[in-house]
Amino acid sequence: MGKGDNFLTAIDVGSAKTCVVVAEIGDSGLRYRASATQESRGSRKGMIVDLEKAIASIQKAVEEAENEVGVPIGHAVTGIAGAHIRGVNSRGGISLGSRAREITREDVRQAVERARAIALPEDRQILHLLPQSYVLDEQDGIHDPLGMMGSRLEVRVHVATASASASQNIISALNRAGVHVDDTIFEALAAAECVLRSDERELGICLADIGAGSTDIVVIHEGVVVHTGVVPVGGDHFTNDVAVGLRTPLADAEKIKKAFGCAIVTRIPEPNEIEVPAVGDRPSRLMPQRLLGEVLEPRAREMFELIRDHLRQAGVMELCGAGMVLAGGGAKLPSLLEVAEDVLRRPARMGYAAPISRMPETLADPEYATVIGMLMYAHRARLARGTQVPTFGSKLKSLFAKKGS
Image 1 (cartoon, one colour):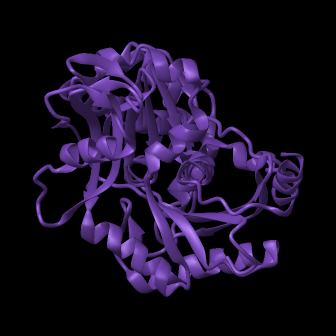
Image 2: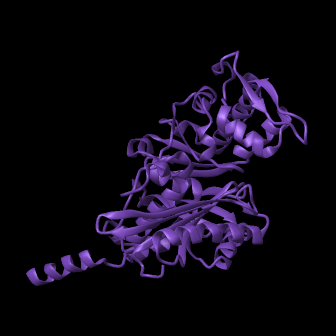
Image 3: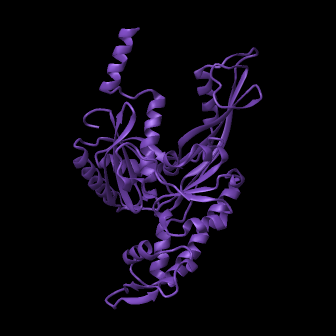
């Protein structure tokens, strides 16, 4: 960013909205500085379908955030989502010689590179390479082999892949909007960064990020990612069902869903009525609110049945001992948690973003879990790489440390 590298910006180019959040990196972590949200145009089901419209949406959101923070936004991290995401577990290893020796960082890197060497179709790229555990001379379950002794090192990794063209289109849209993309993050992984608790990560948890066009999934067990995937149903499918079922325009269907929707029909009092705008110039009608529930409940059940079948097929359903956490704007439909628990036979809760310093309460909403998670993920990755630029305060600390040594 313009004034230096002590800012982080996350941009979520979703199918429904484009969101920008800016944070400042301080000695004690991230501090909120600005945010902006604009309606997305040119995006559908997590993919760019009209580049010029997408660029315009990004530019509007970025300019609004720039006006609030007071410095230009030149760099950002962004999210990748949609039905093109695939995850696979891989394993690779290296021989260290006939005699045991100490494991170096280069040995670990080479073992990970071997695990990375999987055959991918031409239009696919690796989005994340996530080590799960190491095996040293048949001793399994090692989390960090650095400095240990052995003669053969193997590593298990989870590889999240994405369509290269879909990813590049998002990067191109941001570049043409004047923003350089520093990193791309699978959106469910970003949401998991800021909503999951440590005990859930250990016991086993499935996070479902319900966006407008799809539901992105990540399963974490014993603290590591064991599965990533996508179910091609999201909030827009619910809205389309309402538009068709109640014979009302899409824009009105979205408003009705948000204001009066419920995923379980019997939770709606029988006498309740809602005003439903008609298509064309016909007058609005009063309809039983339960009719809306009768449209939404089957779609909610179908979505969680698809998630259940997806998890079973991947062989990770039994690893979700702590159940499921729902994030994303689509997660806010009343009674959706009950449907999730009924279909999956697991506990479920709403995923609220862990706040960063000075963050407005409105951003703790599940709708913003992904973009806040992107900031946290990028900050953690930056610290891990050791590239954080020292702030004035930390420079003073290092100065005093040198004087005292």
